[in-house]
Structure formats: structure tokens, C-alpha cells
Image 1 (cartoon, one colour):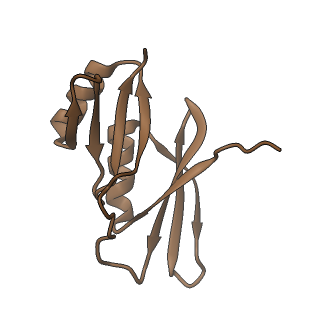
Image 2: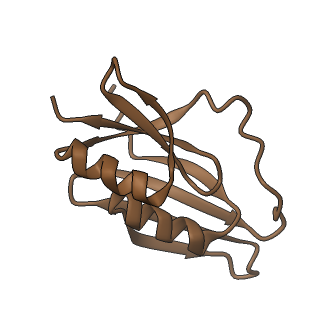
Length: 122
């Protein structure tokens, strides 16, 4: 029996703000969208040409307050072929929330507080 990872879900408060962030920060674009007929939710799948893996953003009409992310001990990691350019972009965006210089990695935070690890191609 085999299992293939296909997506990870993040619930968001402002879908448009999150879509803009993920496109600017990581080059992720909308691949497809599911909208409830009654308007109660929207699910958007984001991805790029580098991988089949997708990030699923879910907006819920009846959840306007920020989500409780606990101690934020989980994250999604992205590998980049131009670490210095990525760092400069994220620094300009003001979204770097933690750097581990000894490991050569850093984290950015999305508008809803989710952490995303940025690692260089080694």
C-alpha cells in the first residue's frame, strides 16, 4: 500500500489577502476553486510548476475571527533555488518572523499567522 501527499489545508480569514500573499511571497497561483452554493465556504487550491503538492486555503463565512494556531509549532517548508533573492523579497515584504543562521534557514509568516520555512537548495 502506498500513500502520496497531495495537499495541506490552512483556514484563512481574508481569502483575497491570502491569495495575494502566497502569489507574491512564494509564486503560488490558484489552480482550482470550490464555492459552496449557499456561500458558506470557499476552498482554493494553490500550486506551481515545481511540484504536484498543493496548498488548500479554506475561507468560512461564519468564522470571521482569527484562528487559534496554538504555539505555531507546525509549518510547511519551501525549497528555493535562489535563497538570497527569496530572503531579500521576504525582508522587503516584512514577513520574516524567525531566522536560524546556524542552519541556514528562515521562516516567513502569512497574514493568518501560519509559519512557512524557507530552505536553500543544497
